[in-house]
Image (cartoon, rainbow, N blue to C red):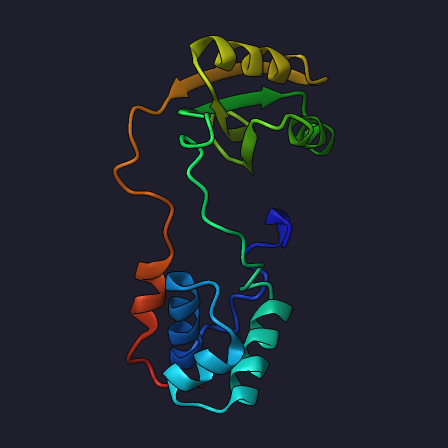
Length: 169
């Protein structure tokens, strides 16, 4: 689901069964529908209907494998605040999406217009990536910070666990 649509379906919360199903798939993304139904104690059709509904609502966006970018040779993670020419966000985001080392781009409020997560193989490689970003038309200014560690990795588990115990709707 494109990031511009985040929050669009917030009027339909995830219920307890949805949360249990999503936690199960978070822990073991290769589980099949039949095994999920067995572990959750519900019919296979119920699991399939829930998965379809979660997908249609944009809650469940896919089953990508978890990758260690460091093990792939991209041991350096950096973040950049990017200031752009006003009214050019779509064009700049298209240019950033063409740079393979750009992993995420978020439109933000505050001092910068975009917040970018990128990876590189080394400091010299980071300079190359930064140069590519600066070369994107309508990028005005870039401020970069290198991540030293990731004490709290990306996660959704606490949000799903919070739903447990709430009666299904």
